[in-house]
Length: 199
Image (cartoon, rainbow, N blue to C red; front, side, top):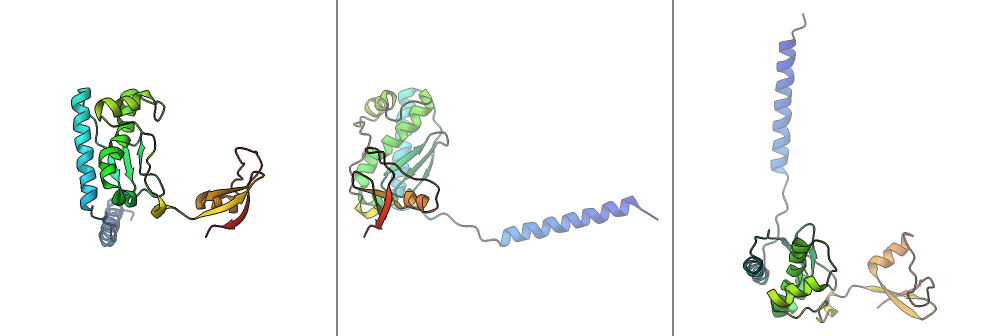
């Protein structure tokens, strides 16, 4: 005779058993641990906190602290991701230019986040951003750094147009190889053609 209660109990036991196995499997899966911060990276975090405390006093309002990461590659010293409230810093350039990072790069990137939270979408280095740099942080509002980027220079590739040689990054070169895009010279408006890899 069909007994709905025994069927229910059987299904319930099976569900509990499956959940236990699933939880055990999760427990056995090794989790990637974040790399411990270097003393210099800890200094950057302390500098970020100091900048935010200055901003809260100056603007008389609280600001959410950003997620901060030290995994930026390439020639940029830092980037600010406005809608994610996230900062990324280049660990190689940080090691090579620690004083400039503390004095200029950190306030530069924080000013982008503050500008977005205060004024919404504006020009990246417009008057609102410049005002925060000058009035709040007392830092000259330079739009780019002047660090030596030889140690972080990626491999590039030589292309040619009617004007002469043009160098493309490996990311753009790979897009060309995959047939995803073609690039035009900004001056002569002819297509760039690949010649040879850089040494």
